[in-house]
Length: 490
Image (cartoon, rainbow, N blue to C red; front, side):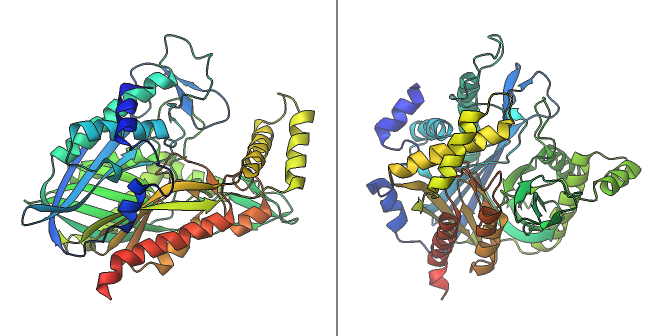
């Protein structure tokens, strides 16, 4: 156990505390402050690219990156409101170019903040991953014993990562100063549902749409781009949070470090709006989405080649246009006094139920197949068996749901690769003018499929820890938390 983790355990703040603990319930039951306060904003960015070759996380086989195509970064935004110089509420949000998060990462960063910033509530730190599959591996349990000794090991990168993320969070917090905020909405075709459905009702992630029995793409794609803007007291744009219902998986199969389309997006925005602009990439509910189209691929490729741009540049071009659409309106309404309320709600979701038949099929696959069989088939079978075994012990899946009110905007987090239909349900019912959903903001990281995805089966829908019942329960919990923050407006 690291020194920072030991400190954190002593403080009683380790990881996601047990559901129903006094620590969590105190936060969830505390009165929500409806009063408008003076906004203070701080922002910072740090490079989290290792200086040595490193294993990559995001595929079912080992990849070693010896090349950096674009740096991976951590970008922090610190928010606080005050009334007559007395703090009302606060939050620190850190966007990371990673595939997912872990309890070790959260524990280490929060321990650092608890030690260095005694007036900050470390529970109000929110990390979120862009879901880049070409980012370094930091998980201690991956079992990459064959990574050469002179390369950076996952456990070593984790310690490096904890130090850098804690550094950028502290820098943003210490740098907060009077500022203003605005919000806007743009539109861009970034996400495409990646599950093909065939005549027999089965669904396949990245399934071949040229097959004669292909019938339709499974679900909806959300083309709304929600954007937050932050200015300093002089009116200079200093930070922006961009919420896109699509993971950063454009170049997911490469063997080089790459921040995916967020690097090109950040660079394009800085060229136009200032090199000191901090850009937070927030991935919305999009467990069933990808930026690559499922059909018309040759036509899309031809158009990119005619314009002389890469796939990453194409996605960034669309995102920047949507951002500018939002900025055109948002810059006309800047709020230096607003409501900031941050609620932490412990949530318990029912585990996905695996039938005896599913369990038997999964065991049969593992017993009769060997290492030469498709890795995906065996991976899904192992997950199904593991989930069945969890069911025998009972219990639920518990995590901390963060919901923030910032003026007319709600920000809601979840642990999962949350399918887009759930995000649509939340946005449609939310009392907020705009609702930002930040998936992969906790150490869970499992897919959470919808009812129709569960019926279609396949990767992303089978072997998950939580199923459609839990997905809908999370919708209701999120709406209830948002309603609570808007009750004073009735």
